[in-house]
Length: 237
Image (cartoon, rainbow, N blue to C red; front, top):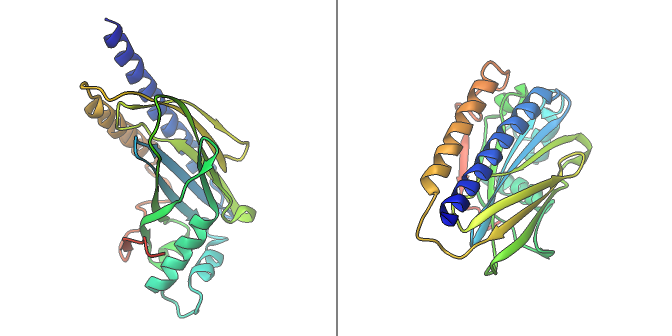
């Protein structure tokens, strides 16, 4: 009975996290202005790593500045080297700390839309990175995320994703006023034979569907679109 109550409590907490992520994302999309870069970060904590997903969506008034920052040779196209250098600059301004100890953030993949879509302000640059975690003792931990990239022209969103492993449970999230900094309180638990992965995946899928309904009709449509160019395996950056 105790185990069943504990599992039910974990499921309720996961649902709260999923709904919170949807509400924050919807608010950020509706508040995004043309003269700002919206940087939306999502962080997933698993027993061995923390994964960061970051979308950078420049408004039409600042999009040219973002393009110039990437296209350093001004030839009107983005080379692989220019993309890698931009990813390195973005991630270089991001801090991840576990219990006060810095973590090494490594790029995994990046997707850049075509420049025309970027300049229209209706497309996002999508980055993914991760940081390996040291062995976690059972009990409470804190993960700190801080984003200082393009502070002068950016607005920020930051949120924890629902963990896929039942060994990790997010218990609280604390943000600074601008959401460029997020502290995630979580607990690490011993391995369990009973997994809630399928339930959690269902929650995430439901949350994603709700986001789609909330953002339908928004001026920002498909992120990337035709001409989007993916770069995988950026660990050489």
